[in-house]
Image (cartoon, rainbow, N blue to C red; front, top):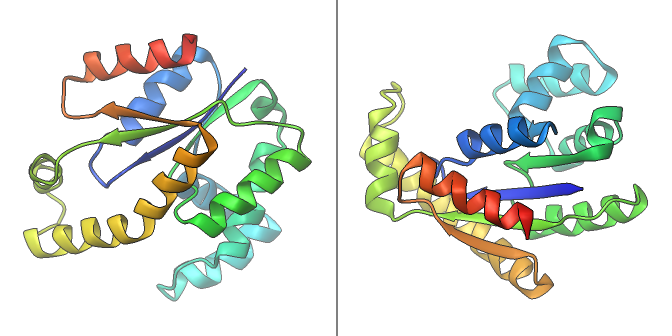
Length: 184
């Protein structure tokens, strides 16, 4: 049973690696952004609530994200494992997730932190060519990530679940490391 949480700065390759690994293991890759878009598109009760925030350009509150995660982890396909990408984003969310998993009688097997130097992240994010991505906005996103996520890395370090992977290598090298972690 593989249940993983992926951490890493914007541009670290979390989504790409989570997707590859999930496909190989035949388990769902659960991205909070995807859950949100899906709930809104399907007009679920939570999706309708979330839409009002999204339409106003506001951040969807933690409680709503947590309800969406709970709902998603309770679905049939998630019973044989999952990879969470983009959640938790802070220590209170990590604490909630621990409680939620206990309640669902599930446990996280590992937390994978994809470590990539800022210079590489900057190149990758600038290379995406998104209109809103310039050096200043990217530097700000990385700073916000560090402030919110550094405590999360410490949190998972203390649980013994944290595995740090060098994300500044080829896709194949990183994938090989991830396969090794999953097998151990």
